[in-house]
Amino acid sequence: MSSENIYTLSDAVELFFMGDSKQKNFKSAMVVAKFVWNEILRRTIWAFESQWMPVHQGNPYHYIMTPEGSEMVLAIKEEVECNGQKSLRKLVEVKNMVVSTPSVKACGCKLNCGCGDACAHINSYVHTTVDHIIRGETYEEKIWTEVCKNGDILQWREVPTEKYVGAAFDSVVFEKQKTVICKVVVKECGCLEETATNRELVEKYCGACAPACVTPVVGACETVFQYGECGLVYLIGAKVNTQYQVVYQRSVCESSKVPEYALECLHLGMDYKLKMLNPTVPRHEKEAAKYAYRDGKNEVIKYLNPIDLQFVEDLYSHS
Image (cartoon, rainbow, N blue to C red; front, side):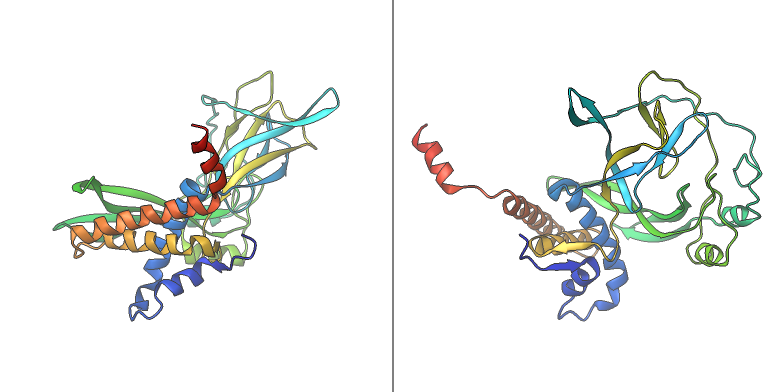
């Protein structure tokens, strides 16, 4: 596998359009490619990374930040030692932590952090919409942005998509997609730093709201965790100057790496999704694209999990 060529997602989309005069659709195809590659990573290749994150001082509970570029946290682990042997233990998530709701300023920060009007500036933006015609009916795609406590600016999209049961059309559903589009500099409380660069990013990408400063108010006898706002994880029972391992999947962007063995699967998935979103494509073509994409994912699985034919022969010879 190490000899495989590696492509960026942007290069993979260029290859998808090779010899095609429709490269004017590159921007929308990139959006679809991000969605498909994210689906392949999560459900087929199951790629993940891990990183040790330091514990930060908090009141009343300390916290860690999720790694930059992470989209989905799979586990948080701590190192434990027993009889001279070290191992990793998975922390338990607290589902029903009570979070205080102190009085806040207009920007959502309970502290006098001197954030100026940068937060209020973000609050002035609203989501945009795009109309899609599906089977003669108009459906509204919603697009909005969110500024996370760790400084990530996320773009959210709810895209109307045809849903099928077998070969039969069932309904129109909305697929939610998330993309990290940039990162701004924030204060410890989560409010934006009053800088020219931050202003430019906010103007370019907008934002739905500034994150509020909240504090958990529960107790625990052992180290457990609770997800806070974007990128923030409260650790109850943790000590500062320690580290916890975060196992996660990385968010997909134009520079994401696509190995050669998965390139065809990505293209088949893009073809399927683009046809599903196009009301002029006949149903039988959509069905054929769906099964081709499924076969492509199966080929990736077989590549990553090669079967020893001698083992199969021996298995049947002893059955």
